[in-house]
Image 1 (cartoon, rainbow, N blue to C red):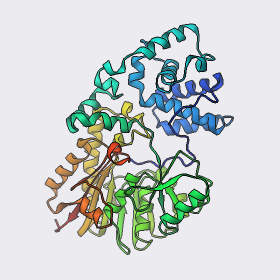
Image 2: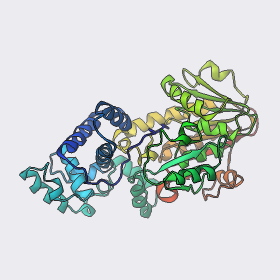
Image 3: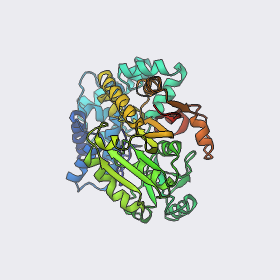
Image 4: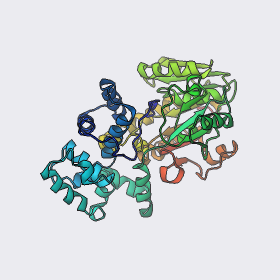
Length: 438
């Protein structure tokens, strides 16, 4: 479940009261109300709202986005402060006063007397005494699953990492530029940038600058992509001249990396069932300079276009549709949208997609299964069942594959990235090789 983030970004982060006015508060309250009842992704709702309210400047948009994303992250513990009146207004006031430290004087322009009294009690709530799932801002079912998977002393650091805003990571397009050259240019332009810890092509920026008009973005020298997502491409490790597929390509972030690693030589299929997602790949592909990418819309994993390529591909990446619970730093609403039933439904779909994608891999070829989920049900369990049902595939050491590319990461046989350990979104990936024909 990968999504290309908006380029001109307003980031969830520290709220400043410098431009706080009743009008700005009203916009935040109205947007939050829309988010809490919407079935669409939060970033889409926010983008639509700002398109409808072009009178809001960059600083005002940043304040509004920061405020609503703070509520989405911390909604459960904030709800415990709302004294039974769970409205968008109360949630927002609680976030500003209790989490962002705005005082009564700063908020007085929007507070009535009753709310002022309530906020004093809200700030006095001892969050440390709340049930663990409430204190950690997780639904009960998710807290229970994570408690089964992770050691007791790791749950809080993990959730704290998931509740932090994600940094802005870039990927350098190696076809057009080198990382040092891009770093120098960004710093010359006044941006604070540093090389990512793991990805050889990654750069991390301080803050959330708008990049849509930056020359390096316009000419395709850089793309926005989380460092963890970049590592999946290096795990697949495509070579020049090979036949490769990105089986669930989406908007193509990983596709573009795979094409660059192939030096635009060979054939790279970008499969997806959604035409609108592949349409978002087209302008990115035009900027990238790649000529070996072939976007293909398929009806399902059983499409005849897939069957025609059976046993012909050197490498296949399956970045499977998933709960997205590893991306809570940037998509906090997902923890309130997903349920045990939705995860079970996704797991069945993941197994079917992986089995279909595996049919493309020739003997000696590599198959990588990946998700941006934290849950074993979507990760290790899927791979374990697949290997039992497909003995022609064997697991390869992710750590060894990456080490051969001078990427030093202590991950063992299967890659698991976590925000509090690696500073990335949470990702899972397993690399497998087809040793014999069926």
